[in-house]
Length: 83
Image (tube, rainbow, N blue to C red; front, side, top):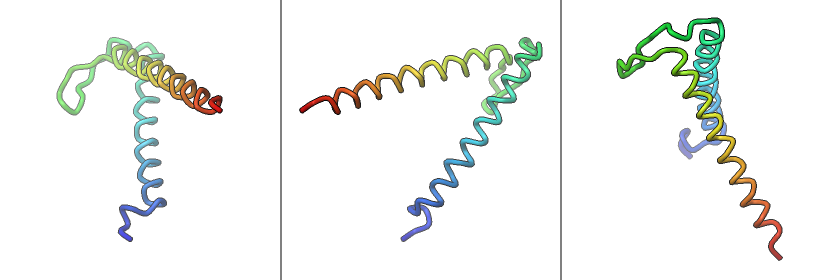
């Protein structure tokens, strides 16, 4: 069995990516809430962002995730109710 297919290494990889994404989101939220809405930075593709715009994208992503989770749970509930 290759190491890539091992569940422990897959879990560690997802964990590391999750920590990196959460730390980036925490940084954006911290700067935006501390009054740095109009400070700008460049992303990896050299797109100019403001922290306020990035905060809006993060909030939109959370809302879309919650709506998707609601649809998923509704479909699971409906499947469980079938005889």
